[in-house]
Image (tube, rainbow, N blue to C red):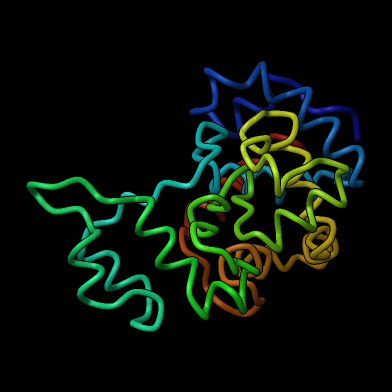
Length: 219
């Protein structure tokens, strides 16, 4: 299919107006490199990265969680009740986002699941890019795949070119175009959001709405 146009991008992700011109060439290069090259693949990719990044506007994960949200979202082996109360946002106190990241992405869980083995890795390798790449191991793998020093300079994923390319790399290495071809859209979101297919991802309704809109725009 031909390269995506700015008009198509804004029809699919209308809230991206302020950044569409910056991201369009980066998205087209990334999709071409990783063979996200049919309407169904492009629609699925844009829907997922659009949801993950707030329509291309948020390239760094926010951990601005309330105490209640921390306790609901993460298990007690990832954050204790005491730590949630100490670090979470309350009416009179902002969230300690660095401490939250080091807690929920660190410890035994972080070492096993994300390769975060050093103090501070949770914050240093918090979600970045259009698909919110998270964890030292994922940064290292993406760095190898993209020939970028992402372990040493994780902030590179905050640049549009690398944000888009890392998302397409992750998409390709996890076989998500093949899931798109098989009409398994919810499984794509499940893999991105939970690490496994077969689950209902966070934001499933918005992901699907963006996908349906993209299919119409790209038809």
